[in-house]
Image 1 (spheres, rainbow, N blue to C red):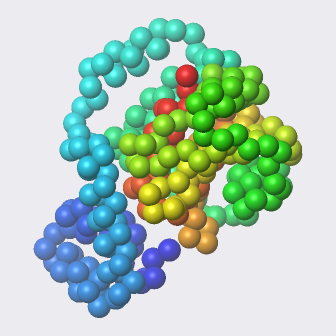
Image 2: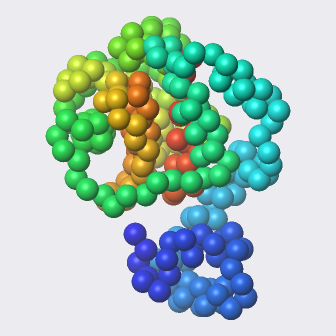
Length: 250
């Protein structure tokens, strides 16, 4: 939430990215300089941007590598995934997200009981406690990947988020209200990022909102539903969501 009504969130990002004309830049700069909260927010956004450039280089504006184009073209020739992974349309959408950085925003509305978002946030809060916890050990994770594949009816595994400096801590397993898996990751400074997986309701969803400082992203196709949550900027959530979605398939 922007604490200053004179500046929209998109104006703040345009200021950071150097996309404003001289007059508008001077106006935004004057407001930011006089507001400690905005100064801190700008500093955080710039730190995120620097971190993302360090991870991904300067290729955000470049065309997709030919190898990726060939993989996408080859995938479109195959039968659409039903029980073996996430669809090619979703994969293509992930690349669009990664390189263009577009999110669908919605005002936060308290999800109904049984909704994947409500269950994911409850799991993150420890309510209810997981049925079991799988440690982040190679053999245990390999076994759990087979379990997740059977439960979700899609070939999945715990994605590697080390490019964004997040390491897997463990996997919380739930039998109710629906069979689900919460993958918990930690950053070097102790920030927790959770990835909640369960069978999709069949309704594709892609949206993001912020609640009490927690950024939440829902990415669901007709096979698997994913809810990602963490305390971070929009930009960092974009990159983590793309890495998680493309990295979760075997």
